Amino acid sequence: MAKQGAKKRREENARHMKNLQYIIIICNVIYLVVRAGIMHSSFKWKHWVGLILTSFAYFLPYQQLHAMSKPAYGGDGELIDGGFDMSTGGICGYLHDVIYITCFVQLSSILSEKFWYIYLLIPAFAAYKIFGLVKGFLPQGGSEGVEEDDKTRKKREKLEKKASRGKFVKTRTR
Image (tube, rainbow, N blue to C red; front, side, top):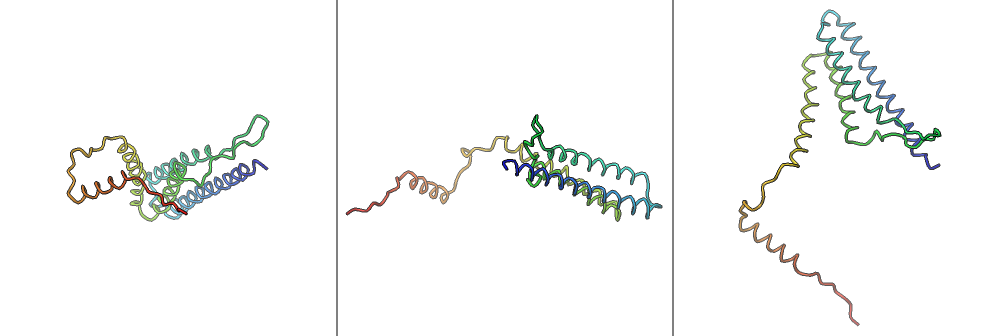
């Protein structure tokens, strides 16, 4: 009974990874049938490169998610941990986003090759996140060089004065 949460998470992760696998397979089949089968006269070498690129873009995040979702077992075969919770954000959410963006790019590139530019969102978002991380380590301008106006100074002094006063507790006297 104590390991019910781990068993439930193991089953949810297995179902989730199977659904992701179906999504990837369906997107690849649709792309091949429509682009290489129906529109075969316009299927050139760059479309093969696009197929390889999207397959690579599916493979890496899927393998990482698969490794995260693996349950951990003890020496006696007892389930210790059901794997990482796939519904959480963070790196797991980013890996899902890469898979979903790849699905969109692959299917929409059937209509127009300009949809490949959407792939630029992934490195742009990574650069944005890295800049936010680096920005936290950079020294910030101190307040010693900044002059405050009269209104701000009075407000700050009033708050400091209020904070320096002790709080009075009303008591009931008989």
